[in-house]
Structures are given as structure tokens and as C-alpha cells.
Amino acid sequence: MAKKDTGLKATLSALGPKVLIKKSEIDVEKTEAVVKNIHSKKDEKKVRQTVDLSEQTFKKFKVKLANEGKKAQQVLSQLIDEYVSQ
Image (cartoon, rainbow, N blue to C red; front, side, top):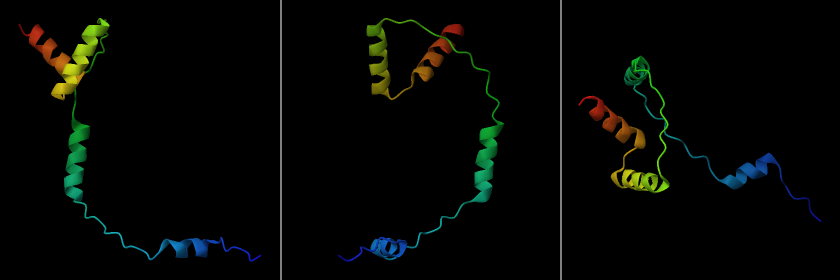
């Protein structure tokens, strides 16, 4: 019985020829500006609030959010801002 060649050379030769990967060009100044913008934002301190809802109301809320493509935090923040500014 012949010994099967399972070495690294056999494995690599079975993969086929090397494919050159195109190097992307990165705009360093643009990247630095974006990073600086992200890290320089001084957001307001956030507070977490828990709300008890009926299961039926919560399901309707989540369905409407999904249909509109919105997030719960976004909608609730808007509603509370409108409420406190009255």
C-alpha cells in the first residue's frame, strides 16, 4: 500500500495558483477626521427607565416599529421630548 502524501506542500498545491489581492487605498486624513468627530461628541448623560406594558400592547408596539423601520428608543425619546415641551 502506497503512503498518502498529506504534507503541507501537497495541501498547498491542491489549492491552485495564488490570487493577488488588490490593496485598498485609505484616505488617512478623512479617516482621522471621522475618528476625531466620533470621539469628540459630548453626549448628554443618559438615564435608563423601565416601563411595564401589557403583552398585547408591547407586541403591537414592536410590530409597528418593524413596519416603520424605527427603533423603540428613537420613538420613545421623541414622544417624551414632545410631552415635556408642552
